[in-house]
Length: 134
Image 1 (spheres, rainbow, N blue to C red):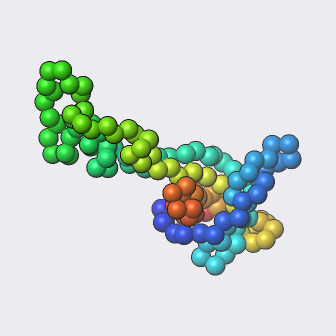
Image 2 (cartoon, rainbow, N blue to C red; image 1 turned 135 degrees about the vertical axis):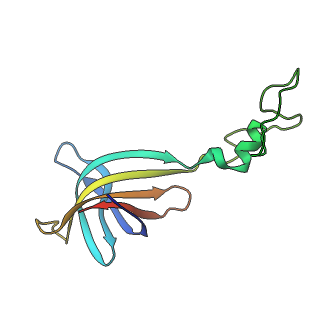
């Protein structure tokens, strides 16, 4: 699969066989071509690299350079006076991933077809095409 990081316009709708339809990307516009989704191959959610953030290091009690030694009477990873929580620190940015099989054109006919990885960022509301095997 070739890797990309291209913005795409996506229209959501019902995709799949009658009786087994799911709400998913129904069509997307990529590099001037309209692709119609035939089937959802996979769907999952990814979190960002929260472990690399300054908030995560503060929560654990490291500065990224050296792991501090534990002192008696203190919980590991806590500094006195720090009341950070994972939820309030904003560490959990998520993106929804879709692997879809799509055909080029309004009908999604037998012409050009491929498998595409699309992502939707809940943080900024943008869609990206991340991969393509055609």
